[in-house]
Length: 585
Image (cartoon, rainbow, N blue to C red; front, side, top):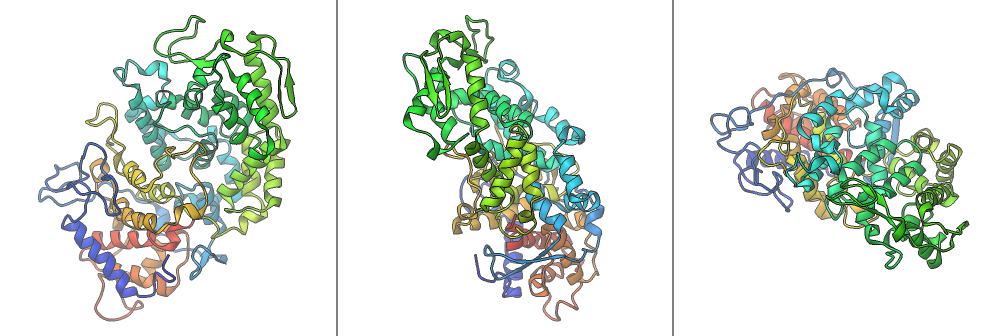
């Protein structure tokens, strides 16, 4: 990162203004055949659908003259309020040239609602109090989420179905439901109110990882449902449900693991990734773990002789290897093939209750919410909450978010691409959507604008290349090529998915008034978009854009220009999100 990306205000403003002009003339704009700047696949998706390029029809983002007209952007009372005084001052190694001035509410919003961290979430926390807000979020069944779930049931109903229910609706193309599962994830991040649950779904989905589209994509919708059902409950219940679901069994080759031909893949990862960790077990433990898992498989389109229906988990005792097993301190004679399911349940309970498992899961939770390298003290604190509550995940998350080290961790986390892109999408306050990828649409496999921006950035929901899920450390997400990709992606994301919901009118969303002091407006929108109070020298490029890049005067004299208000506001917002402040979790 540039040591001081705000050091030349005029250069910064001119650069963003120039990119705006290029967008207006069609240079590199999705929808006119060009890929978004930053390389990779075009952000409009695999079918090449545009997002409001020249000649669009009214209602899909294109004006009669081929221009992109603003869509139905909503407003929030929060955006019009004067920012409060920041009560936290911190420096950070991730952006060493800036001082971070923020509030406890915004800090909690950025961490607990990482992909949905907006001014409204911070205002909720401020109003309710941090611990009351955390407790409410950890009981998501009490939170109304009808808007997000309504969109999903209307546009992406396959995401809520089991594989056995999808054959008819998809015309035998069950794999298409995996795209809808991805779109349902993004819809919840944009419009949902259960924001902490979504963060934990993402966390646990990285910990016990099954890709959205790979060997197991036929069953991925029900694996996503398992994540949501159990993500705040007992980890032992979740892990048993995962191990007896076709998605994980198929992804890690246990569906073909039999007494005559055992496959170690799942037996090993159960120990190495999901529970005790690499240093805790031996190769003999892996062999016994593999034996214990034999016979647990699945059916395809035809029902099984055992009575299991199509596309279901099935236990086949005749394929289960018998003989004594010993894994760490767990021992069983394993003499009766019919007892295989009960044996697996007891094995999972044993592993999940071990201290090594508690500390590994606690480390992931602490790394998610506190710091890339959390202290041993905070890891032990979270692990104790997990063990004291019978492997429940919610108390462990609460222990992390209420620990003193959490309050001191401002500036210690870097956003992953999905956090940046989906926060922009949520902040836009879109009032209605007509999404690509919907059932009955022209391209049921299309991921929409935001989905393809995430594909280009290497952070599409649950599509990492290896079985340990996406990394959650700054080092992985700070390469120069990725930063360039995301700086350009912010331009596209800020403009909005024009085909889906129209161009975002940020001047309306943020209540930007012509004639108002540009400096005050810049300070207000910078706070409400990033949650940080910016110093004057960092506000100058934003204020200059709002004032139409004036030729004379200074920041104290500039006023918001009426001419090109929508364009200027859009570029000011882009600069806020593309700044170091916008990249910090």
